[in-house]
Amino acid sequence: MHRRASGDLPPVAAGTRPPADDDRRLALALRDGRPEAFEPFAERFGPLILNFGRRMCGHRDDAEEVMQETLLKAFLSLKDLRDPSALRAWVYRVAANACMKMRRRGRHQPMERPLSLDELVPQPSGDGAPPQIADWSNLPLDRLLRGELSAALEQAILALPKEFRVILVLRDQEGLSTREAADVLGISATLVKVRLHRARLALRRSLDAYLAGRPGGAARRRRAGR
Amino acid sequence: MVEYLSDYLDGDLDAALRRTIDEHGGQCPPCRAFIRTLRATVEAVRSLPRRRLGRGAVRSLVVALRKASGGRL
Image 1: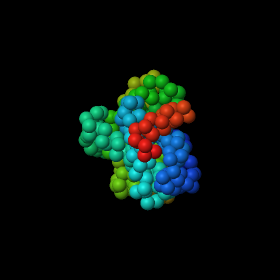
Image 2: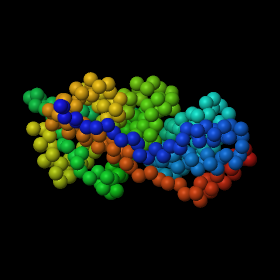
Image 3: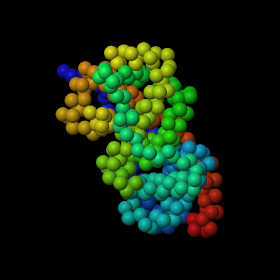
Image 4: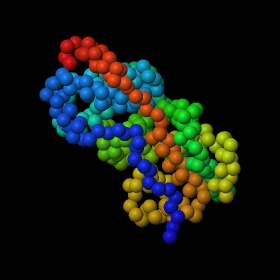
């Protein structure tokens, strides 16, 4: 009997996804040009896009601009949506484009550089001894997230290069599947997985730097590196 | 092994690779700590609070967008 290192992650709690049939019905109503469908459309997707925009842009004003632009543009161009059940992915695609355009206008310039595994994973020391890795996984992160850790983590997300950030947000915050994220961004599922993994590693490194200095962090590091 | 860890946490690995990681993690404290903290990181990202948009805000938004659309909504 082997010992498990860690169980599967639970599903994304934030993804309050309505049934696919609801999206389909809404998409058909919108495609038929029924103006009364706009309010339920805004109600369903406004909050989703506001959160997506906030994670991508970092500022509420910009997130609101992204939300308004996305809702209006998605609504007015819905006639181009071939598959009504793909409404959600369609809306995220419009939102992602709005975010990219906003950055091209010069705001929130991300630091564009590749994230290499070597810099994200602790390396053995020169004498071949295993790296020391603090195990802060038992810290009460849910409680810490109600305080300053939340802001630190949000900043770490904003510091990710945009190609990595957009995938992390779609997968781990908006709850899209690998396939859906790939469709939204027009890239392969393999590339989504590679970038998601590196984004997660980069955030782990940021949290490690933040949490290792807390009481218990150094002791945990010594124990794990033994 | 490190390149498989997100697939491992997402439950997307085949049984043989999963078992290899489980077995290694059971014997190697640094790797176990790495996997646990990576998992905690993803859980923390997923737990970040989301902003809500009240019904009044949605109505205001709809009114504003109708105005901005120049009669197309």
